[in-house]
Image (cartoon, rainbow, N blue to C red; front, side):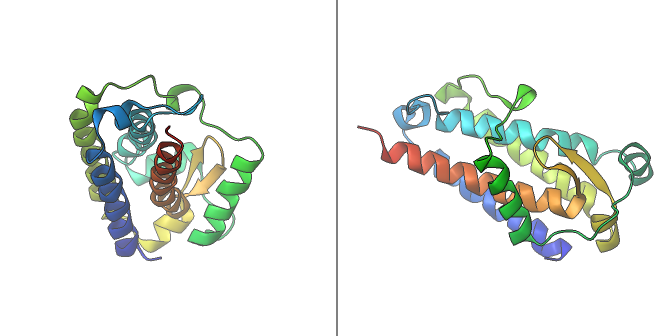
Length: 176
């Protein structure tokens, strides 16, 4: 996937997630099945997961290269990255620390949407000057996947929001 297609998919998947959650009632937005996250917590988790990217991509490329280094392998494809993420989840990988959301009230939904859109726009705008080569040479740390290229991080971000939307649908389908 090339840069512009990545940007389009980032926007489309996050817009779809926001639209889906925006149509939930307060009861559904706050519903948590068993010990799983509510839709509001899924939203907060997505915001928490894109925030470091929005903040990190403000830095100059040379600074990111100095801190995290360069890739020593080619980027995985989107499907390979998704497969690797799913394998990590099957092995028990879960969000930890700063990525764990507290309960979210329905009244916070609109502000979280605005924050998510702002972060996404920051990510895309700050990456517009990156080359395709930058996407494949620069690496970033991921809490579950380890060091991955910028391209892989963006693939993850595209899939991650879809994954959490599917979880919301799955949990709401179990609602009695």
